[in-house]
Image (tube, rainbow, N blue to C red):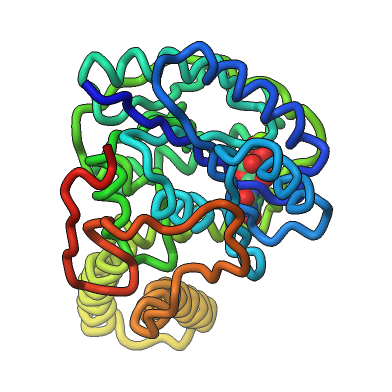
Length: 333
Ligand code: UDP
Ligand code: MG
């Protein structure tokens, strides 16, 4: 049987301080495997000398490749890009700050050989996250799993191995507001988790600002559930029924005891409450509508400024720009 090719996808944003140590550790791990390998960095618009380092590494070791975005497009799209560039029979996605211990990938590969199409790292605790981030993540996954009726394990993230079948499936999504974690579970395939301990960030700082986290959460919720859109009709119905009931009470009371004028506070309260509810519902519609608009424009997911030793494979069954299926059998082996 032909030697299989393993691809490693590493999204990087200003990780110059981590690149050398990362490559050393990842290649040490890959050296223990019989598979041949390639490493594909996706430089997500770094402003430090991450890219210069990647160039130097590619000059020394052509199996280390990189593509560089024209600007920062975000980690979700960096992963999406990586998935279109890799040639492997399987790809492993990792963070570049060594929080995902490369050694765990050995277990991923083991499971892959056993026949699993997706092997995800299941972090056993979130001690590296601050208390706020931990709460935020927990609340998000509860809400997400409830709203989308899916079941993303709260410890599963982007650290995972995807078989070629899953890679090709992921490459068929053209979503701009992309939520990979939801997509991994949406595509299905035979999956298994491997528990691992998240390490501390090797150097540098987290690239996820509070704003990015909020946006990420909203992207996730809106792309996997329409419940927030639909819940308003239920709420509207409930409020209307309550209003009718209250109107009946007032009518009966007026008939029995005559009209009295008080009622100013209740009017103000109901006006303000209902105005609030209406604005919230409009806002929710806005969140969806904005995303619908983004998707309808069908802008490219990302723009590549430079390819360093990497190019998109031609045989890919679902090249992002064309709907045509051009499959060259065996081109991969
Ligand atoms: N990253 C990226 N683009 C971004 C933000 C992050 O490519 O806009 C990369 C980053 O360089 C790292 C990985 O995504 O390799 C995870 O980011 P980070 O470690 O900052 O996130 P955290 O571990 O705090 O969730
Ligand atoms: Mg990190």
